[in-house]
Image 1 (cartoon, rainbow, N blue to C red):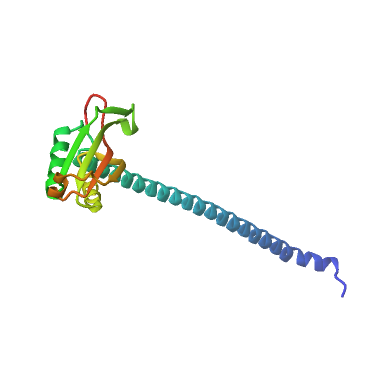
Image 2 (image 1 turned 180 degrees about the vertical axis):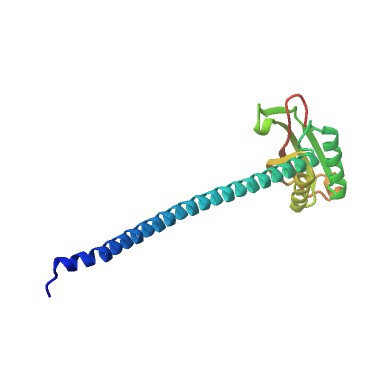
Amino acid sequence: MKLSNRDFHRLALPLAILLLLCGIAGALAWATHRDAQRAQIERDRANEAKLRSEARLRQFRSDELDIKERGQLLQRLRDSSILGEEKRLDWTEQLGTLQRELRIPGMKYEFAPQTALQANGSAGYNWFNSPLRLQLRLVHEGDLLNFLDRLQHEGKALVIVRNCKLALPPATASDHETNAALNGDCELDWLTAHRPGGKG
């Protein structure tokens, strides 16, 4: 089939309309694609902002928990008298109470002068050590373990056992009378901490 010029004139308008419609469809498709890209970018930005907010919230909760735990630890240290000046009178009374309650046949002790462990310690606290030489006359070794365990849990300081020795006592009449079968000789550190200027 052969088209004449007249046919081309008749098709010109429909072809122009078709080209116009194709152009409009292309423009709409491009605009839709551009809007989809913008929407994706906005979603990505919103997601990043959400993730940042969640990370900040987690960090805040972690910091809040850390502050709470530190506060509780500080309160426990204050309650146990680890923070503050040494309390030798309380310590000696506690030693005597433990001896009576655990029925330790004999006890001698001597605190050495307090010494500074470090200056400008952690969290602005300075730590001090009050060394103790402790000698006990014991019925059996379990008495020593019980005595040291209670001292560490109930002591109004951080009590650290450096070393202990058990030995048989020399045979004397007094030992038989008191049922002492062992001598315990221990060195302990009584640690306290306080802020410079004496504030706990």
